[in-house]
Amino acid sequence: MALISSVGSAQALDGREAGLQAAHQALNHIGAGVPSLAVVIASHQYQAREVFNGVSSLLGDVPMIGFSSPAGLTQEGLHPHSVVVALLAGDFHADTLWLPGYAQSGRETAAKIEQHAAARVEQQSMLFFADGFNGDAEQFCGGISSGLNVIGGLSSGDLHTGNTYQMAGNQTGAGGLVAAFLRGNLKMGIGSDHGWDPVGRQFRITRSRGFWLRTLDGRPASETYAGLFGYPARDWAFPPLNYLSRLYPLGIEQGEDLVVRSPIRVEADGSFRMNATIREGIDAYLLVGSRAACERAAQQATQQALLQLGDAKPAFALVLVDVAWQMLLKAQPGAEIDAVQEILGTKIPIAGGYTLGQITSNDSTTPKFLNQHIVVIVFGENQEQR
Image (cartoon, rainbow, N blue to C red; front, side):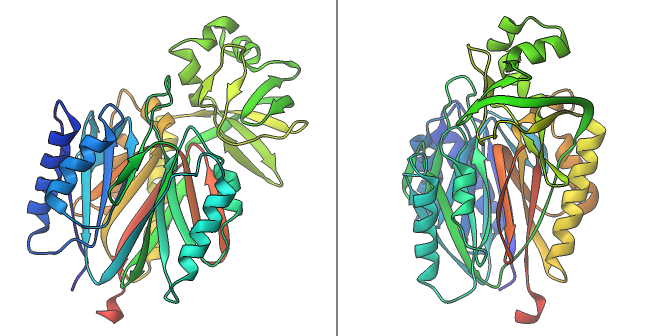
């Protein structure tokens, strides 16, 4: 059976109706194919259980994973306050896993992933989504062996309340990790890039603890940014500046590379709440993004994904984009999808959403935790196995 895909999206007053309509649309588009996997991207404004009930009322026991996002993405562009349902059908199998303890321990969650993967001898890949506000993604990545191909993102939602959720099977909730283990005639090409560059301003991380970056150059982080951008330090603790701080991430020196680390928000005490730890005593650089650089990054990520896919025929693209892109491209919503389609074409179904971090890996490396990136995952089938 050839690999086929379809995407449906819908807006409604409640999550159940939006989920029902999106699933109905996706089923209509997939025709006679029997879905092997469903991926659901739902507005954080809906209740997770309502979305699940609406989608599952039509999909039944089709393996499903999903996550919350401020907006969904499809080949038509950006869809606020919506549910997006993507279906994949082909000669592959998927089994899903719900791990509610991710927020408590990324390391223990990784160990359970490894244990689950070891139960099967076939080569497999794992697509996952985890809580973006709680949990240590770097710790999770460090606990995954290099033999498992892991790709995913951290679900986003209300930056003020930290409201986010995940869905797998018939389970929904916050603070967890959901995964789909994929095996069979299914190949994934993965590409990633970002559109932020250093502008010359350098800082020393003088105090940090856990996920909180306290001081830059000996001053509260908000004071340092106040001096750069002209707004009073106290204003950075309130909307909209406390969330727009994500537009100005830090490039952390790691060898010859700069690793991007982005604030989720600015706290009342002027510290930056991150979702990755940053060591004291190292140098960081202010990064600034642009629409042109992000569009180039989206194109390069798509080219990488297609190159990695090799001679496999592309059938579907999952696009995971950092929430900073939504902020930066507010005047041109969906511009990142247009850039992806310039490389991929307009006939390949696309689904995606905005995340608070992205994870990529391949068979030879442990997963990497990214901020501020776009990750393009192109699904295809190996031609010689058909």
